[in-house]
Amino acid sequence: AQSVTQLDSQVPVFEEAPVELRCNYSSSVSVYLFWYVQYPNQGLQLLLKYLSGSTLVKGINGFEAEFNKSQTSFHLRKPSVHISDTAEYFCAVSDQGAQKLVFGQGTRLTINP
Amino acid sequence: ETGVTQTPRHLVMGMTNKKSLKCEQHLGHNAMYWYKQSAKKPLELMFVYNFKEQTENNSVPSRFSPECPNSSHLFLHLHTLQPEDSALYLCASSQDRDRHSPLHFGNGTRLTVT
Image: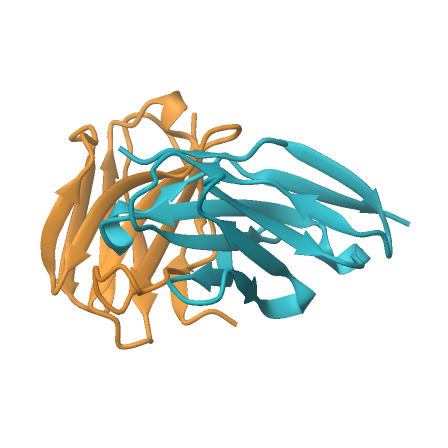
């Protein structure tokens, strides 16, 4: 079965600094990868997804992620964060369809002024 | 603004109560899901419905009973819950179970069992 590891449970950064949130998954077979964001008191919202093609995927709010098959990683990056990016970020992977989507434990991103 | 609406937003119930959570999606999707989100744990998939038929039940205790009368509505009936069932319950939908379909989530129901 698939598993997803988000290596950092919390990441504090200063406003306008770059950030990377790390995600590794277990399987090397064909996978579909997602990043979701959860703002306080809300549900999860899709940030970006990798299905096939270019390994660099651009999402909403200036975020991007790079699929690295050899390292089974899908790290999320943003070159300059804003206070409004404060949220919890979830990496998810599926190799069998939406109903088999497996989520990581989440990384809480805190932006300090 | 979300295309998936959950009510109520907050619910406090005693262990002997019976209550229901409601979810409605306005996206024309065919698959609907219930997830449980507890502190410091990954999201747990509870149930999946595809075209109104239940296709997944992840060993959920019988005190949780789902109902899907049509592709737009999903309910979670609750009875004789335990304090450890306190959590955020999230409803989601997708075009279908196909791997290319991302999930669209509601804002959740924060459940507290006393």
